[in-house]
Image (cartoon, rainbow, N blue to C red; front, side):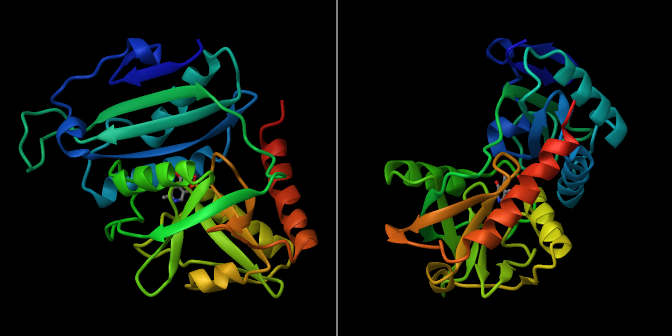
Length: 280
Ligand SMILES: Cc1ncc(COP(=O)(O)O)c(C=O)c1O
């Protein structure tokens, strides 16, 4: 299969799949999701993603129709059907099916899965960033489907010829990016926003922090500002789709480039970790 979809027990190529109009996702965007890469038919960091997926559902009082192990087995079964083993593995839970009504629908949610070919960047090429005010809500720790500000920000980056948008709250505190976490290196230390309700606790972020600690690079999980990002030694952007990117431009101004050896040590270690975990 080139792409593969799943909806409550039905499988098919994505463009052949249909879903009921009364799925609450159509009326309210009422759902949560998670996603990560596979390489060589091996899904990377799957337990961490499934734990976060179940946690997102729990925080919104949504009922999973499967156990963690059942979901893991189903995802692997689907990955095995694909033409390539290098994939984006995406799954979401929506809060059931029912005529439009804000109050919850009874019973377990609807499980969706989507697989499409994808490659992980080795992070060698620097990226360009723009910034925009973070106008999102205060539930950014939950991986919900309510992504309009992120969609707007991603499009804004594209139109500006950039790759990602950095969000900052009033006062200048950097939270994260439209679809990634961001971090700075200053004076040999990694500084990254704390995991409160303003950011998604990224799996790639967790890997970055663990790797820095392993490499004996100090880590500070504290708020930092856009000004600090402009003046950082390096600016890092992480997500499961692109494990460790770095920026050389922010809002048209040059950034980073002042700690290339440290950056390379971290980048290489993270890519090695991924390559080893997904080796044949
Ligand atoms: C808003 C946001 N922050 C951070 C991330 C990175 O999370 P992860 O490293 O788990 O992919 C994502 C990824 O989708 C995201 O959408």
